[in-house]
Structures are given as structure tokens and as C-alpha cells.
Length: 478
Ligand SMILES: [Zn+2]
Image (cartoon, rainbow, N blue to C red; front, top):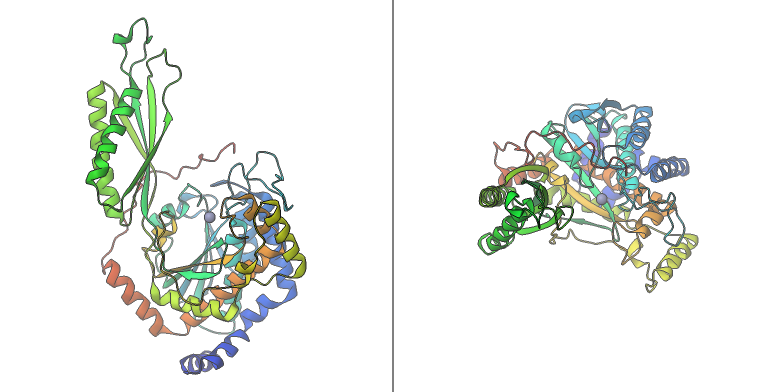
């Protein structure tokens, strides 16, 4: 009965009436309560201080999963064979709305919550990308949605605990394992220096380690005995730099020589170069990669060395969905920006002054009115997820202007009540989006029509990194 009443109200043209109704619903009441603020404030600050890096987020993932379990969610641990990945589910049947959460920290970015660059633990990890909030915001949204479902509405909400976003590609492995199959829509966000929904796609990419194996010898006494692995790396790079002219213009190719030998007087037995290949389409990335492989084989042949390679990470481009984005934007307009009190304003102003920036805090309260459609040269493992169901992303303000992500300023502000306010906003926007989608089969139908128009009906996800194991050790010791 309640579902019918809401559905009728949602169908009414009077936007004001719809707005008032949803903003008085159970999930918003829950997320607006002072005790809810205290709960999530504690949770995000706990994860901020754990600051565990990719695939080692044991305590952080457990803290979020425990909270969801305490709110009636069923937890499936260790999905995709990853100990710190989980799926929390509440409700039953269609539609299924997914919410993505992350909780990995960045090596070397430890930071307390003071107004200067000051590590909490010298040399340790820190949440300089705001993933202490990225994980807890959707968690709050999922709990709110569960409360709405508990009133008797049909549908399912799933929280996806996704590890190792920072270079570990957790979601690529979760997508490969089928974790996101069956979702009708998926909601995603990232901390940032503003509030807005975006249709920005980003680039597909692969990260590949090419390792060459030669024969060591004394570079002065008996160089003819040796075969230089570094020669192979240099020959390979030369061919790749020639190739730049003959790949599609949108492609980006960059590399570092991660091992060029130990000393000039020893012919290097081993050398390694790490490549990123990017393009707006995953199939083009894989075409360029196949050509790069030929160049690497040629370099090995010509220098009398051998070559091995490893695709460490592979991400599809993000497939955006304007239908879900519109609903998300509608929700963001209802919630608005992040409102700072005088104490929080003074704190942020001091951080800006200490950083040498002119004080301007307008970005917290302002929010984009329309869905933006920009360009990003970056890549994200969310791209893989977006291939499986209509997905929309947004950003909510967690940081002062100029700082950007992966900065001590993001880390310090994210660990305060300002971060908590932002994550509560995320929870509200996700909740409002989920409820609107659950109430409108027509909207989901339109979202899927757009998805099929882009992907076709028989799309099969082919993981760009093949069948390799997740790089579980990539942050060990950090
Ligand atoms: Zn991030």
C-alpha cells in the first residue's frame, strides 16, 4: 500500500510534492538523526586511523561488514577469492540496486587531522584519497535503503566491499568472478573538491611489466660474453616510441624503466620496463598491447635475450548511463552541498593558509545543477563494473580547493566531522536514488535500453588481465 502511494506520488508532475515526500521517508529520517551522525563519525574515523593498503584491509572491511550485519544484512565474505572483499545483501527480489564501497589507503600518506602536513605514524599509509569515506558513505546509504525495504517494499540492496582500488584492481577481479551480475543499477561516488554528478568516462588501460633476461658478464673485460637485458629494454622502448605515430590519436602510452641493471660495469642480466597503455575503448587498448608484445619479442630476438611479461592490471573504460545519472542528480539537488559550521570553516581556512592558498570555501556548499560531461585521462577499476549494469558516478566535497586527491589536505579533512557530513550526504543521495529507481520500473527499463544500445545484448566481459590471481602482495610491507 505504501509502495503504491509512493509510486503514485512519484508519477505526479508536481516536483515539489515528490521532493517533500521522499525527504520525509524513513531513510532520510535515519540519516538525519544525531545518533546516526555519531555512529558514522566513529566508523569513518576508525577506518581513517586503520589506514590499511590494498588487499590488506582486514580491519577496515570487517568494521563496515560488522556494521551492515548489525543492521540485518547477510554478508558473503571472500568473494572473487579475495579475503577483504565482501557483498552485503538486504531484501529480496527485483530490482537489485548495488552500491560500491572502497576502503584501501595509500602507502606513505599517513596523516593525523592537524592543519599542517603531519603524519599519524611516520612512513605509514594514509587515506589521502578519502576511501575512509568512500566505504562508509554507501554503507550509510545501504542501511537507509534497508530500512525503507523493511517497510514492506520489494527489492534488494547490495553493498559491494571492493578492496585495492589504488593499483590493485579489486573490482576487475570481482567483475571477472561475476559479483555484479544481476544488478539492475549500480551507484558509485568518489571524494573530491566539489559536488556533482558526472558522465565523464575515463580511459580503459592495461599495466604491463615486460621483463628481459640476458647473460651477465664483465662490461670491460669480456663484454662479448654478455647479452644485455637493458639493450632489449631500450630497443623495445625505441620501437614503442616509433609506434606512437601509428596508433589512434586518443591513445596514451607511458613507461618507466623499473630495473635497468645494477652497475654500469656489469652487463645487466635482468631489466624491466613497466608500461601503461590507455585508450577510450578497451578493444583498442588490447590491439595496441598485441602490437607492443610483438615489439618486445622483436627486441628480445635482436638482442639475444628472452622476454616474459605480466599484465598486472586491466580496466575497461567507464560506461556511463544518463538515465541513472539524471536520477542521481535529482537526488543530489534535494540534498545539496556540504554545510560547514564556523569551527569547521576556521579549520579549513587555516589549512588553506598553511598551504599558501587564498581562503575560499565556496566549493563545499555549492553543487553542480546539471549532469556534467567532461573528459578524464585517468582510468579506474569502476570501468569494469560499469560494463555489467547501468552505473552512475558522482563526487561529494571532502576537501579544500587546489589540494586534489592523494594529498595530506584530503587525508586530514576527511578524518574530521567534515568528512562525516560528506559521507552522510552520500548516504542520502544513494538512498534517494535507490528508492526512486525501485519505485520506477520504467526508469530502469530506459537505463537498460541505453546500456544495450552501447553494449549490445550479448556482451560478455573478457577480463583484460586474463586469468591471473589478484596481486595480493603488491602493498606488503607498506
Ligand atoms: Zn580514490
